[in-house]
Image (cartoon, rainbow, N blue to C red; front, side):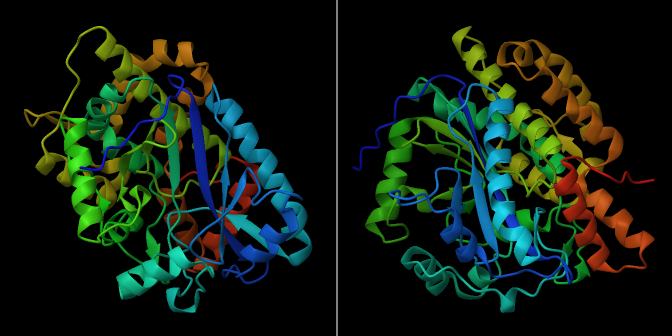
Length: 383
């Protein structure tokens, strides 16, 4: 059996990965200039920039933070990287934008980065792989003890719908209204090994799964497991990959703070010998669909007994419970921003509002997303 060592990591350190679209300043359509950006920011003597990375498509760059104590520190890393990118993109008349999907871009026009692992992915996944014109946010949280990783991951599934709804930002696809708050969530799970994780009880079960996947050629390396929640053995973290692309720094900090606080809260509960919440796979699957379909209006299944409530009602309870955790983690203000998302609307709601105000013209939606990225906060609230 393939043994999977779990790296030593300081408890509740945090790192954030943010995928950004490169769009034309005039048309709002995607621009295939990622390699130009990466070449321009390439530090001398290094293989890659420490905070600016390549992605699957040439219309995308990813900014990544270092290993940080607080989400605020991680955000500062990301902002410095964005400022550096803009020194290259501004003269090219290219803007940065983030959402789960581009509202109107055509997936057939997008070019894949010239790298063997991406070519292999597209060769295997074909039509679905070519359609992965999507953007997401990944939050890593350090876990000091490997035995905690799977219990915390299972507990996080009880709050999957909360994170997905708060970040939902992909109501449009290929110029059409999908009727979903997060079309990205349901598209991404079409890839092999993507979607909800298996709820393993023991680390040896994960090792057995990976061994089977390697033996049968489903994956070549661990990172090809693309679950929405997955252990990251090389970093010693739990990687939370639930969220759609988040358009503003303020919202990114808030959703990241909620993620950070949840993991630390569950870690503390384990230390105290208390049982963590769990939810059966069939409820987890239903919650994923409900939050993707209805977003902030979703009624979620809250526990293994099938109790339900409106997501906004449960979020207010959750935020009150996590206040002491936020104090410990230095993210009280950032976590408080979740109240602003509840009051002002998630991105998918703002995008629909902009479309309605502009006769359904989706270039106006792109314009609003570009403006929000520049402002670092939402600029329009739904009526």
